[in-house]
Image 1 (cartoon, rainbow, N blue to C red):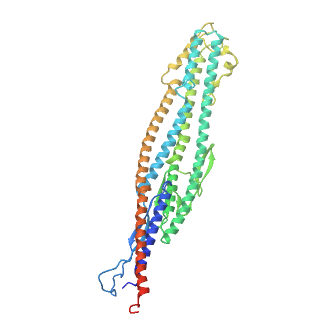
Image 2 (cartoon, helix red, strand yellow):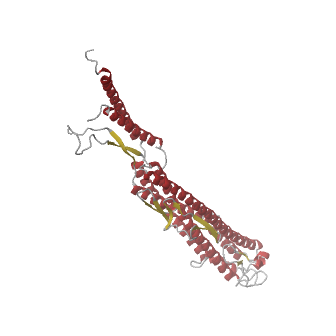
Image 3 (tube, rainbow, N blue to C red):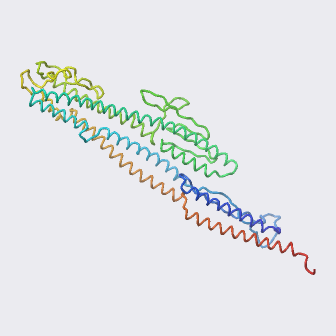
Length: 460
């Protein structure tokens, strides 16, 4: 049968259990605003009864309860939802960076506006039209030359802007590589602590929260795959290659090729494949979008040079000379006025003949704006339209993904987030349990006092 001090031990267990449960509530309240924190719950279970069933057990009315124990401090978490959050974070970060890059490119093109290339092309054609009306007027010729010079300088400016944006994106690629390495080592360090804690029977809830938060941050940078083991270990892959395995990290390194940063694996120098996250979008902007924009500008410049020079060579300047180019160069970076045009206004071939007052050739050049298929204007408009369509589509996709990400965050907060009201209610419940256990201890103390101090006094 139980000993005389059985009730004191029962009360002690109740006091300890309710104290720990109250402390867990306090830990939850302290981390109510901590990003990535998952609320914890003390799981109270009845302790093993007395006596445990066996052939030697005493017979009696039945088993006698021995109080309460803390079986586990449980981390409230939905692993499936956590994995969805990582995937959503990767897609959201990709679309955010991609739509931002497209918007910057749209701002770089600056259309429609009076400072855009479209307006400068119109001014250039208008200058030729005015020259066709006054072919011998030096002011009209000066206007054509300056319009051509301004157009060439704008092509140069756009090329420099694309180059500057490429360099800025490239710097961000390098920063992302550094951040991936930092988070990989942080995840490996946390994994070591988690495995060590689980090995001795502890429950490393806070370490697991920190690791999940690091994985979420890494997912925002690049799309990763996570496979967790029951012993707390994990295998983290990036682009199909192992980045972290338990406490081992295979870091990234980078080198510069053709003026841009190339991310490589440190063990074999192979290229790192990235398909999502902010880094994936940055690589797509740097390696696909901006080269495409530059290629479209080069094509526009080439069409302008070819179209204008082809007609200009057929005309005559005021000096009676023909077969001269108006522009030189073949790309947006090297387009410029030809040396004869720079040196003399008379070299501008406005006439179809050497006769004074002939502005036929200037009129032909002015009509080049109306070429629908091969002209520089139509090609440039197609480029601007394509960028606008891509910006609109990316913005809409980003908004849709933002709604999904917000929805998943709300679901996570409903499951794992800390409700201060619920915690206060639970704290009051544990306080009442603690007070009841203390009262039980007082009753047992009074009963033992009666037994110890008054036994054997009968008859005295």
